Length: 91
Image (tube, rainbow, N blue to C red; front, side, top):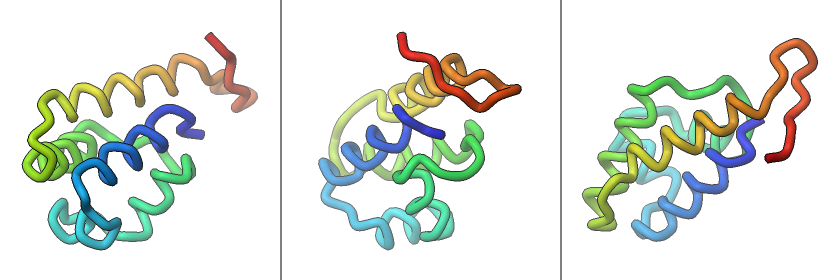
């Protein structure tokens, strides 16, 4: 579950004033995949996915370091999950 990445992606997308369908079209990612990521579902995104999303959001919001922010949120999600049980641990 993407407890940090999903909400951060939603926050950044909204700040950039992009709909999910606009972000999907501009990033070349399926709309269903973006919806799942924002809800915290599905597989962890790879760096290419974070990069594509971050670049589009940065261009529309003027905010710097979006790729790094998304990657750090994903890293935190990965660190706080036990791969055998799927249980997330709090900080």
